Length: 176
Image (tube, rainbow, N blue to C red; front, side, top):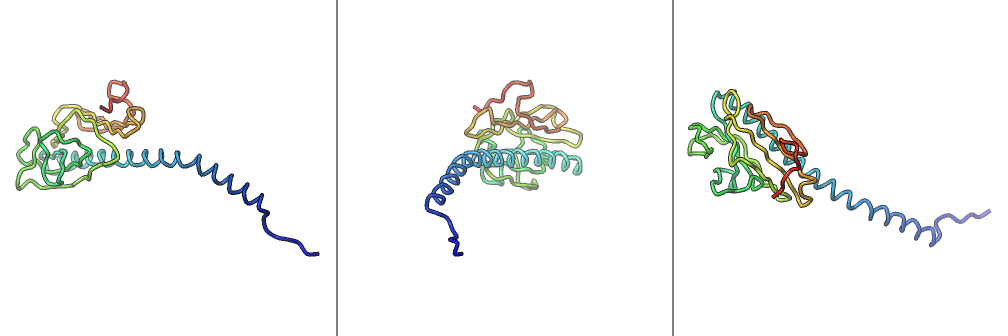
């Protein structure tokens, strides 16, 4: 008995149609997953920077600051947004707002986030050996999806960060 093996043209077209439908429905989900991952990476880097600044301030018994920076070397004093990148440095003179001066050690450089923007209520952050400078801060990480997909890093008066989908008062985040 001689059996034929393989697929008919109709079976092959049906299989291709099923793959096309499944792929078409999965692509938007992958885009959403990619944007979530990019936002999460930026939020986690910022939280890591805050923890590093707090720890270094305690270790050095001094002031350690974070500020936005376009060049990865100096604080940008012209209202540069945090998503253009930021630096972490030992703020030897403890100036406020923080500005990196010659001789102040650069501890870490954080690259720009091109897929979104950061809305912040602080131009710089400074941490001292026993807590922050006594001000709270909120940094909203937003992308093209707006407030509904935004995440905030909320920093308490003691300098402890937490991540939230809402503002510190419980209201929706603002991305403008």
